[in-house]
Length: 171
Image (cartoon, rainbow, N blue to C red; front, side, top):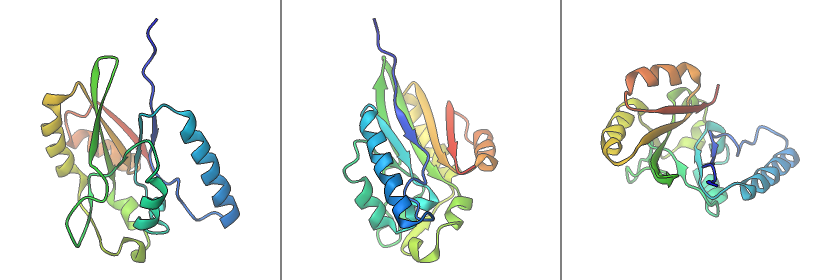
């Protein structure tokens, strides 16, 4: 028999520090244990709380992950390079699937000023339109992974034709 395609996704905010330190450490241990039980095709987009301890801390936490962190609309001011890759293409059961990652301005505004120093937020809609135009000829499905909130997911769906599935967080 064929095995159903499965993959795990994370819409962001797993690195938050609003909890007490001991509770935050317990949450990270549960998160890391859960990550190890899922197939290797994992995707995560950056949420506002993932930056609670800064970008370098987030990069340190995810450097050993067996999955990409996706964020197509935040760059470093010094280089204008994206902080994480914008999309990932993978294949399951004969389908080529592109997954893009975005954070909304609303979520970005919730990041403390010192934690976003040296970073620039970009409007996700023009970036998504450009990526969809680039990816559509290469893939069967385009998934947009969001940390935006439903109040931004719905207008995004109308503004960016060609996205087959939106999976959102921050709601």
